[in-house]
Length: 380
Image 1 (cartoon, rainbow, N blue to C red):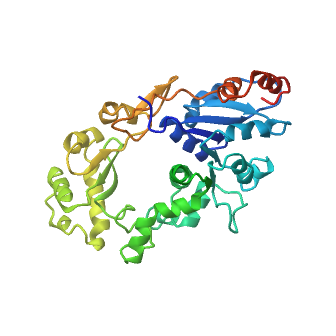
Image 2 (cartoon, helix red, strand yellow):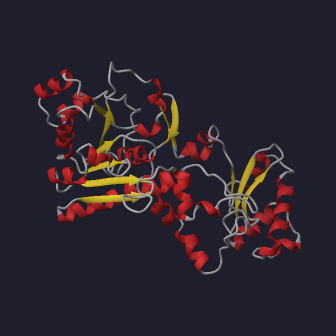
Image 3 (cartoon, rainbow, N blue to C red):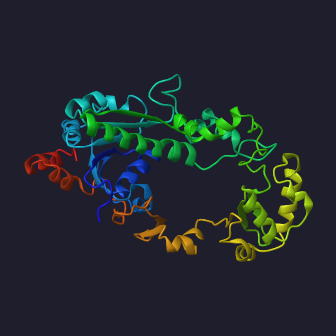
């Protein structure tokens, strides 16, 4: 069956990191996403490393030299037929290429023009360089991550790039497409990673306002301060994760672990948390991770082994749910989420830049003579 977004046509101006991830999400759900790659000068080179670019999966590639005469017109011809365009460049880059929102919306008033940057399209920092760690620092999120008495921990770039950036852009583009379907009017979506990272912190800001969240790291319910919510080393050097917040789950954890120490009964006594965490740490070091899995996995004790990148695809739960797929020998996460009446096809492996240039233009109604002229001129 077709994916839930089958029939949508989206143009992706190929950039780095989070914008391709957003485009991958649309392609995973069945949308036709065309990658506009930059055409390098000289002979085309097959890049073996493209097969490892998981976020490029599921879509065809048109490589074009946007500095050549007629190149912008070709992109605008595609834009005129598209539902949305996605770009992740610094403010002003697309305008200098002649492909800014005004030019594109003039050709297609129903177009949703999705823009993603770190700082946003406006503001004092809008034109400054940055990366995920900078954006989440400004949002307050980075300050909250890490151990007590230590500097903020450097997380992977999930919060700014992918959660606060790519997924917020995907949500914004879908929301704007729904609006365009009702009103016939497209619009620009300005997705800033700083805004998105702040939004992901909404619950914590609420806790902070209520006086239940400290500005000091490692002292709170969900930041490793609580002994019943954290990770512990096992006898074999591997780790387990515990998240027994609710009283009934906490009670089961104590029961399954054979803990009858009265000190553990005051679950929410924050003053006792450091001592209880140390006692739990000592306990978990008495058995291997596999032994703890035998005792706790699958129960309501809110337990899971901490798996590495090689172990996760092989775990029985992930295997049963087909949570990972093998594309061209590359093990990678499968499309998510799942739908009861729509099942997107397995994504195709990443395309080489320009692999489908002529086919895309033909399929989108560009006549053969014009395609041949563009090829001869080195535009595509």
